[in-house]
Length: 209
Image (cartoon, rainbow, N blue to C red; front, side):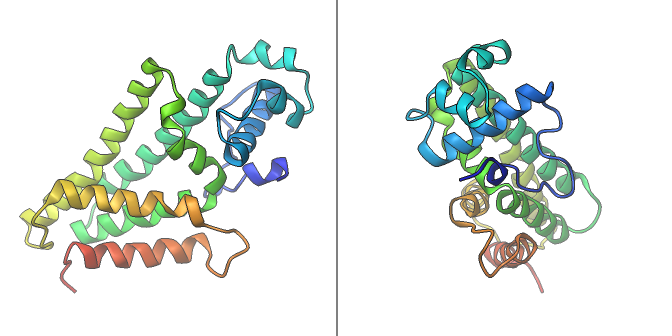
């Protein structure tokens, strides 16, 4: 896996543009690649530095620990996911339109940034207690954004959902799993997968056609 694999497109914005200086960004990209390929615990700081073309000592100039690198990756990824979901939840239109928009954008991000998303979504337990609590709080906000759309759809008579919390969990789990299986060389584009999942979720909530 080359370093470019971890630098998927992000809806037109430059991946990791918020990470500076350039050396810190290179190390973060290398960490994403290594964690996705080998898992957090099997990856060493030497592995990360080597992928970035730097010495192990250079890594500690920018990140105190391997866990700090994982936290930075996870925080950026969860902030991005939350922004996508809250933007959809706060937009105009019917609940069905907002839910479809939320799912399309959330799924598209997990497909376009599948390498990053696998690390963001599946290495949570490797974080230290304080950092894990911070990320869990962001996940709860993401859950709340989707739950709000579904609740408003039920209240408006647009959706038929007996169990709103359970359905919210199912919707998010369905979207997140895209990062596990998506293949950039596959037959479906991120936009196509997003459209498919939006339709599937509307069927799940019994949206009126």
